[in-house]
Structures are given as C-alpha cells and as structure tokens.
Length: 183
Image 1 (cartoon, rainbow, N blue to C red):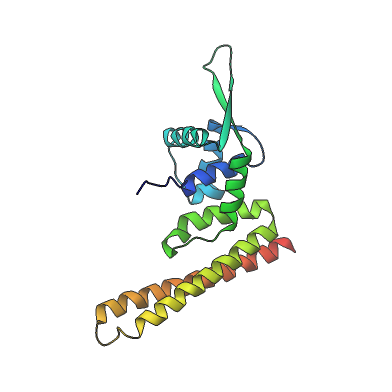
Image 2: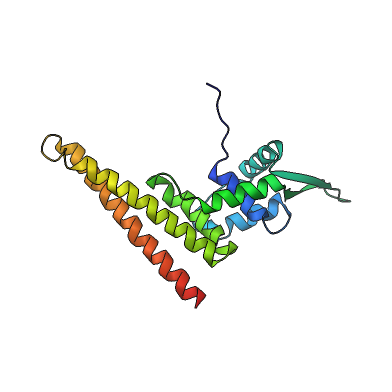
C-alpha cells in the first residue's frame, strides 16, 4: 500500500505563522524560538525549519518569491497558498487523536486557535474535551475486566485514566482562562 504523506503538526505550525502575512524563514524561526508563546513548547533547528518549508512549497501549501539583496545572499519570502490556508484552518479546529499528542500538538493548535479568535479556541477546547471523554470511556470499558486477571495491565489502564482525567481538568482551566481573557 502506498504511503500517504500527511503533514506533521510542525508543518501546520509553520503554516500558522504565515496565516496573517508572508514571512522570511528567519522571521518564522525567530517567532517559533521566542521564549514566550510556542517557544515554551517547541524546539526546531533553523535547518529543519528550512527543510520543512521546502517540503511545504513542493506540496503546494506555500509559494516563495526570491528577494535579491545587494551585499547579501538572496532570501526567500514564504506565503500561504489557498491550499495551505485551508489545510491550516482544518488542522487548527480538529482535536488531537491521541492523549500523548496533547503536550505538543494540541498546545500548537491552542496557540493558533487563540489568535484566530476566542470562538475558534473555545470550539477546539470543546472538541478536545469530547475526544478525551471518548478515551475515558474506552479505558473504563477495558479496565474492569483486567483488575484481577491481569493486575499489571490494570495498573497501566489506571495510569491512563488518571492522565485523561488530568487532561480534562486542564482543558477546563484553558476554557476558564479564555473566558477571563475575553471579559
């Protein structure tokens, strides 16, 4: 079966920086590396950033124009295409599909969802809450049969339950913080 090339969250994050205006790769790296915002969550080497931007260009999510400079090497200005804009919009509104993706992927989505507007951020949080409740139900269904027959497996599921409950509490905190900021 052929491999489907699905963009990574890192690639969508780069599209997020370009959603408002065209930027140079160095500018994107500066914003991504800032000690506040996504700099608290993501680390990306400049060489990786340029490789990902080249991939996004090959896949039609960004276009580039070359700016020639007198005493310096030419530089590329990156701009979102309509396909890139649509891919970003779809990504930023979709909850993550696994609990382990909450720490990096959801944080990036939440960062950009807030910039898109409080209603986008609130919808994302609510959709993620629903996904977490589904995960919680799945764990609860699996856990009861394991308690006495497979105690180690039961402990692993109990751990996962605790993680999901913590995620739900944190999502409540996110929602409260957005409501306070909007007031």
